[in-house]
Image (cartoon, rainbow over all chains, first blue to last red; front, side):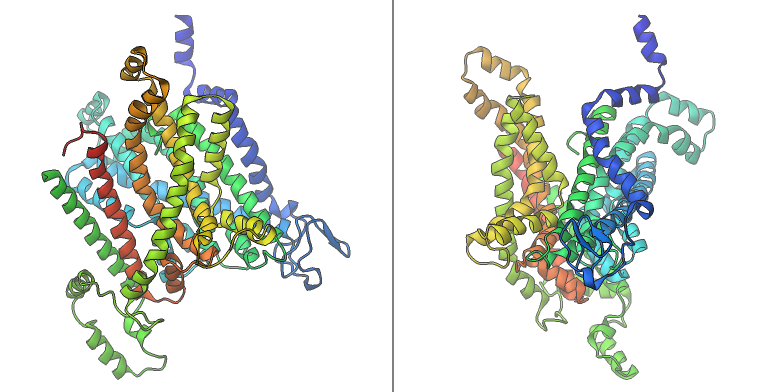
Length: 294
Length: 303
């Protein structure tokens, strides 16, 4: 009985942390993503050289090569830029764009899902039909088309990835809201005169946040890959700004002479996505087992 | 039958929505008349062309004629190739279908047995290895995987061709690059479904009456875990189509995906339009087909 009581009074957050500390998978994910995150966020101090610093005399140096007093740990590209510095700086942009895009689509999807599930009826039908229509066009194709129309830029990439990613959030939130709004405390709040907005934001939203966090963490890896794909195809963030996608594209034509130019940014990109996916899987299994397979 | 009609109506509504979305996107892309005429065209020329293209009519009338032309298969003329956009897409479609099927086949051949045995030998070394491989498949971007495959098998080992389309060997590397993510997803799904099914009462009954394990697996477990995997395979078609855009670009493979990238770069919107419409149609039909296949696999589902 005492055990039961103890766990009942343990704050939710602390229990969650304890579960995290116990999970081997969670630590593994963290061990992958944290060094990459820290190294890319502090690229300005950690990178040996400026990402766009060109030295034609030092072009296509293999990993470990040195020219004068400069050494190229991961080699240099066709313009003599240091691959390590570009990978670190590029990672910062790729990761931040991914996070920003997921926040945009989360905000959009949560709002539409809340409204859809709360008001039901025609509003719900219209929003869910729009969701169906958007799902009928593969995200990358939609994103490419929109980028071609509005022109590639960092801001547009965030907007496009944000706007095209709202559907899974809206669907999951709508489903939750449909069941949450049947609870008696919602009825009680209505009786106390809570308005629609207060009801949605103060009473219903906190109850669907767990699913939203899980969804965000499982989407992040995919969004980072789509951003890299857009950059790779030349319709994302434009060179010379380094992003992992741009760097991989740079090395594509150099495969026969300089394998390192494409390889290292891809390794970093893959490791980051693997780490994010491991943590996402763990969060899903811990916080919201119903989402398995989504 | 009623369900079938309902499903069909739903698909039609979705496709109309897609045409509306495409119409809006194309209109946002700027004045089509300006795209058709060379720079320095006079006001009179522009006005004449706008008249001829029907751009002076109200938007809903324009949309109506846009849809009716689309239904008749007229997506406009490609500005770049000077040929009907539909012809261009249809010409390259077989190559993409070939690649998509190969990658799906690759994914299924790897993922279904791996998923089944992963579940049967739960927590074994095989299970751990299979789950790690699935995670890698899901996490490694297909375009980079493609580049690495080229680096290893074409540049270094000189075993397989890296570019273009030709005999069956041209499909191996792009097929693997494109199918790896699908393989990861399908493997995970099969594994969790088999795990779930294996603990159901009827499987215990089958085991209790002395049925050999392989019979239980093949007749009872697999069939019932196939349904969610099938849904996902249907949905995967959409992702594979997306993936074909990048994969075809990496491997210089002459399919619709590469055509679409070129069209987008050239602002050749007739081709983009045709491609998006085709992608949506294939996706919608695949999903409908999956729904109908359910009845074959699970006789309890009747529409």
